[in-house]
Image 1 (cartoon, rainbow, N blue to C red):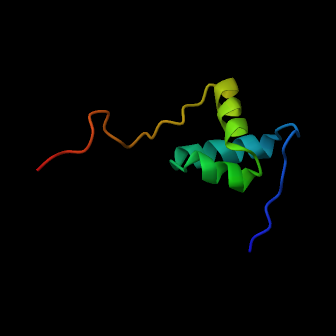
Image 2 (spheres, rainbow, N blue to C red):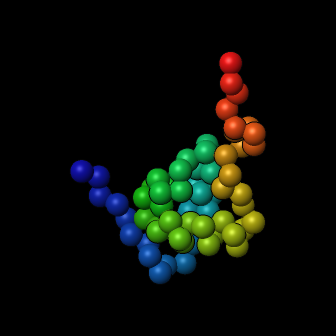
Length: 68
């Protein structure tokens, strides 16, 4: 079982912010981002809000799936 680093309550490092941006760009789910960075989902949401980053998937239609 992988050992996760817990950074709860610690300040965000530049490296963590860089990794956060990469994971968001890859449409990684928020829960997985939190696990990879050792942060809670709420911490990820708060940091994204602070940095004005969108967590909305960029590759999905706002009108839902196409019907055939």
